[in-house]
Length: 432
View 1: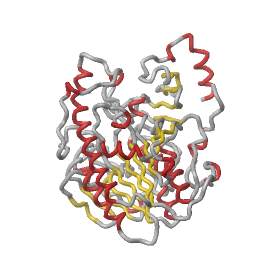
View 2: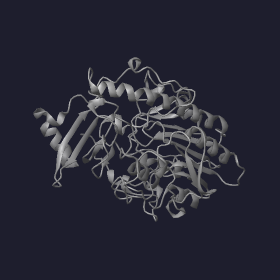
View 3: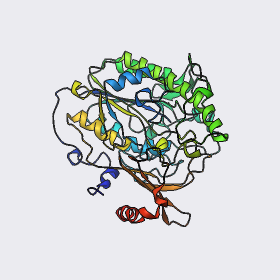
């Protein structure tokens, strides 16, 4: 079963001394700018560089050629608010104060913006927040959520904050924040507008290094919202994953939704390319990722919060300043909860290495949103194994999923149901 895995490290936040997490391999004299590009619902498999024949991502393919590609990266929680809370705090849910989809990030939560601000960084956020108190009665899509104000004390410590709580307006978004005291309606594709505003801020002269987060809603639904200068592919021409059931309603829905999904993948790739072309790459560490994926019909399921690969695996590219690391693949089990720790290591002139051999993944609360996974669950994922326990309504945890990902990357055979593997599974469960 390999060495014991110290998962408790994942639950700690940015107040923990970094020597516990990182090796101090080298130091640099100049502190780099740090740019996080965070998308929504962009699963790891849906990139040209990852081998997806449907994905037209020339800019990200080029970035991958100059970056470290973390091929086993996961979201710790495959649902927006929980994933974003873990990303910003470096702590897993519910330890960071967010358990349920509707829980806001506590106003006193310490985030990566606080930690880098303490180190002299200028900090800025552009785009989707999804961590403020929300109106449960308001429609998910539309102006009610898009215009909802996020007060300054709820903006995670960013010195400049310019964005929106939600609303999924992939076109013509409403923005408010530090420089926009009231929500203002902007015309254009959301990703194009946000990357341009971020690029303008990054070019401003300042006597401090910059930390900037560009948080994009695309390629999240509504999948058939217009994508500028992009034609949706014909659904019949798309190549589906082998674990999507064929010949019925699931295949039809998957093809229909993926046509719009891949159009927004292409449009968002183009927007990201525009941002990369306008910033100083010689002084900036660039991170590209997503908060979660989408099932898109795999195993007959849709959307996220599921423990399957299409939901929990996310793209993660890190283009650093050291040329010898570019174009390299890294199979370390990195989680979004690790990204703040990487950023602090870069700011402090240290190298960071993942010292675990698995990543914790969970949904700490059931999800009531249609099509999402309705169960609370927890477990772990390594490059080889995935073990998941499901919480029953009476509070009991029962074995749910057990996969050998090397032998079965599409998760077609659930070993939790195989009597011949019961002793092996019990050993993992004792460890959990």
